[in-house]
Image 1 (cartoon, rainbow, N blue to C red):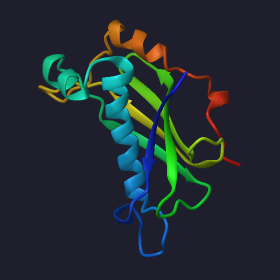
Image 2 (cartoon, helix red, strand yellow):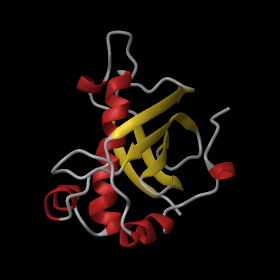
Image 3 (cartoon, rainbow, N blue to C red):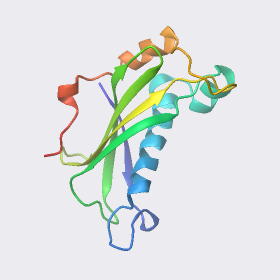
Image 4 (tube, one colour):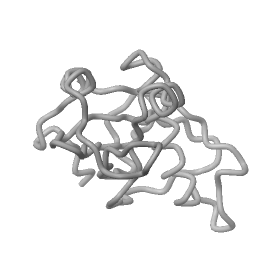
Length: 146
């Protein structure tokens, strides 16, 4: 099972070539990540960081772009958990035309669990791992886009 948010690409999201400016796509992944914590897991990301001393900064990312995203396009931004380790988690993101399976791009983002007080690596508490499991998909279900 995954998590989905719809986003309309606005004028400010588009570059001079008339397509989505790629840093904005990564920003949308993080916005979806924050929404997933609040609406999927049930604890907002700021509360997780402040009250649970836990953050998930990005340590590695890969992106594949398959089709141009243009001004006015409505896209569904999907988030799924691909892997959970002792102190890291890998998330898969992909964007499809709203209401379709047409994959426009995808990102594979690895995060490290850290203490917000020290920014040192820490183990992901079992409570959060159980929430992650509800959104886990098999690698074979992570869209290729081709």
